[in-house]
View 1 (spheres, rainbow, N blue to C red):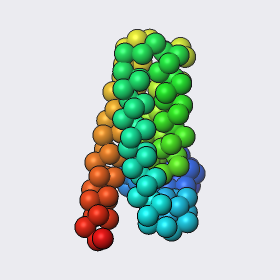
View 2 (cartoon, rainbow, N blue to C red; view 1 turned 120 degrees about the vertical axis):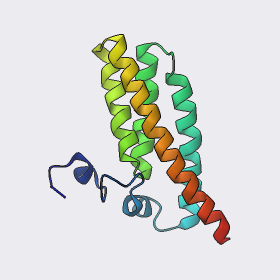
View 3 (tube, rainbow, N blue to C red; view 1 turned 90 degrees about the vertical axis):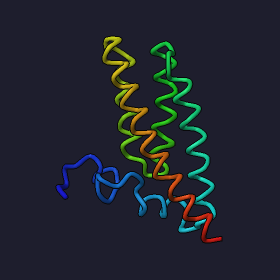
View 4 (tube, helix red, strand yellow; view 1 turned 180 degrees about the vertical axis):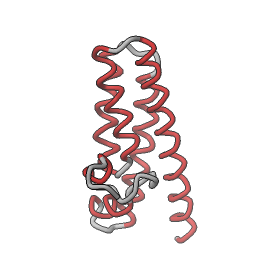
Length: 128
């Protein structure tokens, strides 16, 4: 992978991975119970932030996107973090169409991350 990739710089393994396993393991100190808890919290927060963003004024959408950026970075959901950053930037000075496009991209990235996390949590639950 090229060193100039924003995902590589951010600490992810491969852009095709939805959740950066190595980053998540570092953030949770390898504690699988903590990892599960953090991922569950991220799912709840992502759902809440998307609900707040949909139809919100640009300033409120930007604030919710900013919150989601930090949460996504914490679990290694780089696509969600990047989409949230783009939305935050678009909310400041983009057209309504561009803002709607940024919201749609964030929703898609969040759905993708949610599916990956739910699959991962389902596997973790079957182990116990």
